[in-house]
Length: 117
Image 1: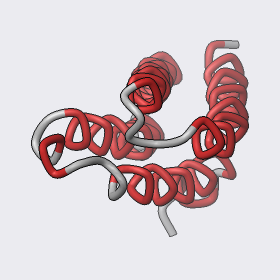
Image 2: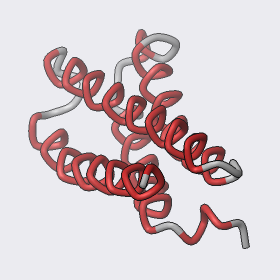
Image 3: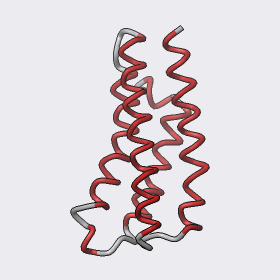
Image 4: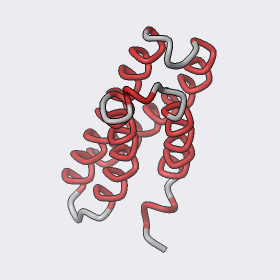
């Protein structure tokens, strides 16, 4: 088994990506190649950068990819807030994803700090 698959943050992020894809299905067709596409790419980037980072040999490199993952997480959060303002998703739907996003953010931050010690 690849090491990144054992990480709780990776497993939670995978489930979160599925949630994000579910929300993107609610976006109007005009957003198929715009906001929806951008949100999905950024969401996938979260798990991809965890996996890539954990394959690196130096802790500094691992931390760098975890930082990129965190940035992608925040990008999705911002884009979902825009989607909610545009009435593509409801405030309640955003409120369901917010705590999951916050939990992943905290886990990424903690993992990054542990690699920089």
